[in-house]
Length: 337
Image 1 (cartoon, rainbow, N blue to C red):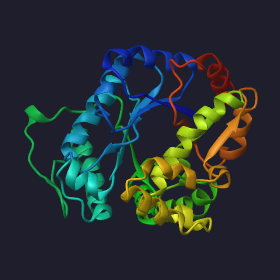
Image 2: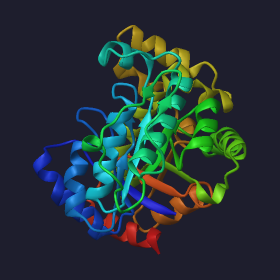
Image 3: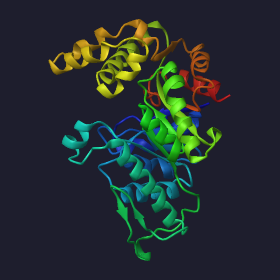
Image 4: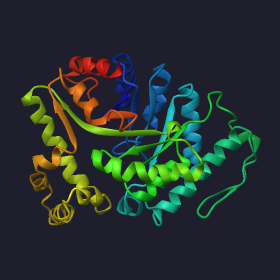
C-alpha cells in the first residue's frame, strides 16, 4: 500500500522545498487539488525538483478544459517528471461548472467518458500510433500539424485516473482508466459494496485485469496525542459535514442507514447555518470516516482499515512542513516498510 501526501495550497515559491521534503520522507506520491489554485502549475515545479515521487492531480476539474488541453498539459508534465505523472480528473458538481467556470455540465457521465476516450486517442496520436481523428458525441479532434505534435514523451503515457462516487463513474473508471480516486467522503463498506463491484464491471467490459488497476483514496488520518487529535478532529468533522450536504454523495450516508443526514445538512447550509453543520455529525458517523491514534499506533490502524482495500492511501491533511513532521516521518517509514 502506497502512502501519498497532499501538496497544501500556498505560494509557488515554496513548492520545490515541500516536494523535495515529501520525497525525502518517503511518500510514494504528492497530489494537488483544484481549489484556490490551478492543480497543474505546482507540478511543473515538483517535476523538475524531485527524482522518484509520483505526482498528480486529485483532482483537476475536467470540463473547463478541452481534452487537447488536458492531454498536452499532462504530456508536458510526464516528460518533465520522466514518467511519474498521474492525470486525475473529476466532474465537480453542476453549480461549479455552470456558475464558477461557465461551461456545460450535462450529462456529466457520458461527457466525461467522451473526454477520457478523446485524451487516450490524442496521446496515441502523439505516440505516432495513429493519425489524430477522434469524433465523439461531445468532442472532436481531427486536425493537427507536425509543428503542434509534441511526439512521444520517451517515458510512455501518463496514468489516467478519475474521481468517482456513484456506480456509473466507478464503472467508467474500470473501463477506461488506470485507477480511481475514491472520494475522501467514503467508508470501507461503501468501497467494498459499491465502488469495487462497479469498477470490476467496467474492467470486465474492457477485458482488463484488476491487477492492472489502482484504487487510491485520501483519508482523515489523525495522529498525535489526544489534544492534537481533537484539534484535527474538528477539521475532519467539518469536512464530512460539508461533503455530506451534497446530494450526489448521499448514497454513502444511506448505505449506513443515515438517510436523513444529507437533507438536514443541506437545509442548514441553505438557511445560512454552515457553522452549525458539524454538530450533526456524531462520533458514530465519524468513526466510519477517520483513523485516529497516537503516533506509535497510527500506522497499524491505517493498515488495519485499508490494507487489501486500496492500493494507495493519502493523507487528507498536509503534514510536510508542519509541527508534527518528525513524527509523521516515522509513520511514513513504517507504512512503507
